[in-house]
Length: 365
Image (tube, rainbow, N blue to C red; front, side, top):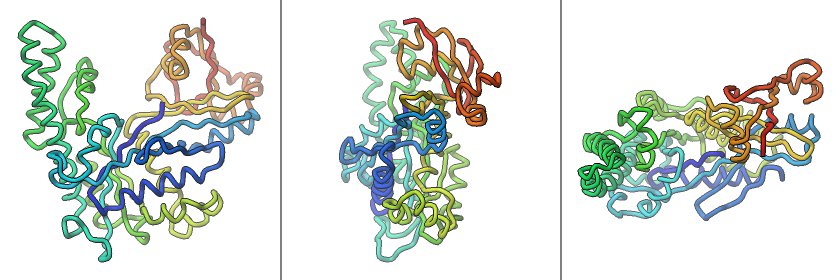
């Protein structure tokens, strides 16, 4: 389990430049962090995780396996994309399969790069993209109503529930608001997710700024940050040009280069961490001589649920989890040292996994 992030935006906002830079960065990572292109517009990258390297060194693990993230580069959307204008409409179905959507917004001036709308205005661009996604959602919902009404009248309870959700979301979209604002109970959440609405996905705004604004942003990015607070969306400031320049550098060269432009970490790291926070994800580890591996789970998951990410049988036959906090594993130089210091805990089915736990599961086959 990692997560899949769709990258959308208008043409000439730096979207593809960012995607190419991120995937080049991934391909330049060490052998333990391989990059692969699944499709021409899909890149799989490793979650930057220094803790995993430290754990592997202590346990003398032969292999390091990080958790993964997929970036999906959607062709530039334009006005009318929902009705077939431009190339972006061909990829709307791909976005539905994502866990979140990153809106790349142009927050830089450059007379050499024309803007499809004739001027730089990230809020207008954001609204243009969102409108196209809302129109596509509205069309999708309108096609469902008649069939659901027939089934609901026939007494089908699931159809009645779905119809109620569809009408609620449809009304919201008609009022110009994204589907993620649809009010629903926890019991309705699964049915709502099955609607696969584009604007129901969590949103991450990516402000693409010029090099001299990379550290602190600018007036354009501040407007986006304000909008993000209102929308409860995530927001990161990235310079796609800088990402392109550091893509082929070694880790040491990257640190040195980033320092010269006032940055502490690459845009890839900022983007992934923002995505994890947005989706409420966290990491736990399994460590041994064969491999050190990171696993992504939802915050609040219990030990059996976390075990199920490795294999369904681990969850079904769960007995207990031998658990060591990351800091204790490092402080006492591994599993044996942590055991001797009394830092290994035996956790049962009700245990809620904490960020950075090092776990070993016992289960009945």
